[in-house]
Amino acid sequence: VIFTDSNHASIKVAEEIAALIRKKQGQNKTCVLGLATGSSPIRVYEELVRQHKEEGLSFKNVVTFNLDEYLPMEKSNIQSYHYFMHEHLFNHIDIPSENIHIPDGTLAPEAIVAYCLAYDKKIKEFGGLDFQLLGIGRTGHIGFNEPGSHYNSGTRVITLDHITRVDAAPSFLGIDNVPRKAITMGIATVRKSKRIVLLGWGQNKADILKQTIEGDITSHVPATYLQNHDNCTFVLDTGAGSEL
Ligand code: GLP
Figure: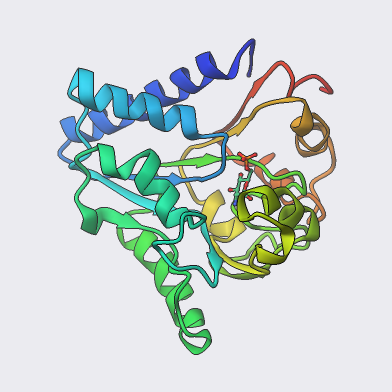
């Protein structure tokens, strides 16, 4: 779906998420959301916060699993995805803190494999993701599933692509400060979500979105793995959709 502007598109996506939360509330069920960081979802989170403050949208029945976190990364670091999520969403809504799951960037190397397996297991125990929000990196990554990621991959440690580190450099005040690794939910973890919405804004995403949507399914562009998901929508603005 191509919208004329990302603001309007973000509000529509937030409305879908809010409707899902309310529906689950009506059924006395938990709503399990997979959440993304980066600039793309910020406006969606703003609208969800507005709905909480002005329209009484409650997040008491919401459980969240974030896609990824840099490794190593302290939670209090302003570049952490932990910090980002609290700043843009969690500090402003009534979600119980025990319902929030964000990959832990502070783990000792020997603890990480078990931690990643437990992350996927926990999502499963909650009945799987009801909704997964995604952005896309210029390498075609979703979460931090960089080129080469396997279709069947679960949550794991990944080595960041050079282009991804270049794109992150400004917020780390230079590429030398950008971590080389991250923990990311896997492709299989994401694809098991019952509903997926990928956000793409701006001309600099146009080329990778053309490859993602119109190209062959390939590990070289991991986002192409979304093509054969049953219930996935790419929500773009005119810049991002300009090569289609
Ligand atoms: C990071 C995140 C991704 C995100 C991507 C794009 O790499 N790990 O989840 O989709 O950035 O970020 P932006 O939305 O700022 O373009």
